[in-house]
Length: 234
Image (cartoon, rainbow, N blue to C red):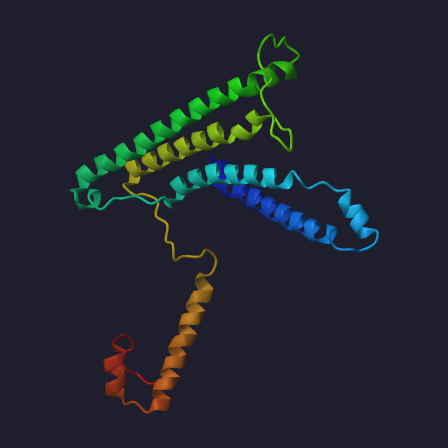
């Protein structure tokens, strides 16, 4: 299951990068096409970017669904746990486990209902047509206004994202049963900058020491204002 450890990050990074580039080129096209530049304006007017906004909306919907699953795995979701944390350890564990299993059940139901909706919204017709089978009276399903994509492809974000979210709930619940720990996200933490932060802290501390010497403070005065430093001069 290691290939699932960073699945959400890969999907979200791809969608976010693609949406950013798409919006950038769409805006750039809009401004350059309105500029009276010979040949360039004529060529840009032949390009149609009317579908860009619709595609960006679809990409952000998919980002939101898989971002929710990422939030379960990393503990980013906000939880009102003031009362639960005041309970005894065994009682608290029961409530936490119940909440995790309830989340798994709820998102699993959403995934199932979403899959049924997608199937009835055109996926069934597409499946039969792909394998060369008789579609009968099964509806083909609607399409999006600009891209003219089958809407069932867009709505696949619901069963896929919700099912992954349910899996993450069960994964967190299993880890909690074995270790008694929940995923915790430090909102002040930025991955990859620990070393830089420690270096900045050292520089600031050294600067304070130099300032203290320049101000002419005595050892006792320095020790009172900086008890953790032991009151030593540089």
